[in-house]
Amino acid sequence: MSGWRDNIREVTPYTPGEQPKISDVIKLNTNECPYGPSPKVKKVLDEMNYKRFRLYPDPNASKLVGAIAKYHGVSKEKVFVGVGSDDVLGMAFLTCFNSDKEILFPDITYSFYDVWADLFKISYKTIPLDEDFRIKKEDYFKENGGIVFPNPNAPTAVEMPLSDVEDIIAKNPNVVVIVDEAYVDFGGTSALKLIDKYDNLLVVRTYSKSRAMAGMRIGYAIGNEELISKLKAVKFSYNSYTMNMPSIEAGVAAIEDDDYFREIVGKIITTREKAKEELKKLGFSCTDTKANFLFASHKEIQASVIFEELKKRKIFVRYFNKPRIDNYLRITVGTDEEMKKLYEALEDIVNTCK
Ligand code: PMP
Image (cartoon, rainbow, N blue to C red; front, side, top):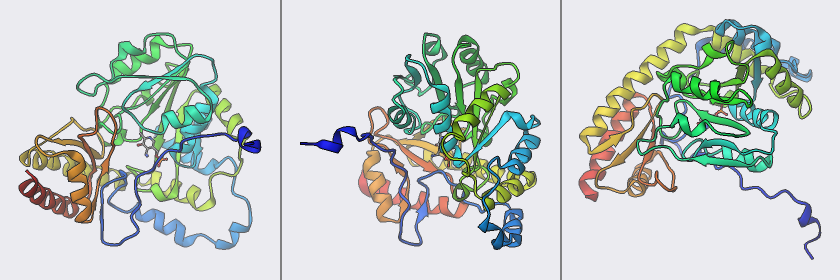
């Protein structure tokens, strides 16, 4: 009866945060950067000759790989680029998690991990965070088919000390440990310095947050040459021309403008620290965030109620209706003006809803 349906791959896709169609919203729901990219990005895009687009882009994105390698002081052979870190992570799952053993990741984490695992038929086990939403390193000292976690974690924003990250890597020499550093630039400590020490470490980064370029879709991984060559082999077995020409050019310009990067990251950190205080005054408690977002819970009002009330006021934040975190809101750090409007709205909600 079902015919061809028996042969179809059934997956439950990842649900990205809402991209509202209406204008004049305050968008604090997908951890984008509230500031624009470096002005140097505008310059290279303005100067691009559109006639070049008739040609395929460089399948190796060599110029971008070179700029990223230079920025991090590593050889080009240690860098793999992709269409956002989602693409890089997907390729890394496909390449590195290829045993019959379960891969491990936290129960509360980036909700794409279980989606890739299901898509690629990788068995997995989620490990509960402790009551303070911390990853306990000892939980990862057991047999497994690979390990992945963000540091700082998402959506909790909590950072694991680098010494604990190193212990996990060191205790698991027979599997790849992927450290997803999407948010590390906002005050976290990177595992990149461990790359030469451990050949089972893959560090994944993105341009979407700290380089204000979510729309250009650029992500990358850094690891030892052999691991990167395996990743490339899988990528080139799937799709060669993934990085488009404007993204390659814009990606080079952005990573070369370190002053601008430091300026916007500094502004976001300052706004975030103020936001912690403001939210506290309004009766919220927040995790010790090292990311460009806050993970906040109100002592009296349900997160789902605040979420809906904010939406009515055209302020979008993220709410996850999931066990353990269903009374939390993930709030991206916006500009000071946006955050001021958020505090005003929250004050109103707190006064009317309690
Ligand atoms: N990792 C984590 C932890 C994230 O929160 C995100 C953003 N959704 C990503 C990776 C992917 O970001 P991008 O594909 O835009 O690089």
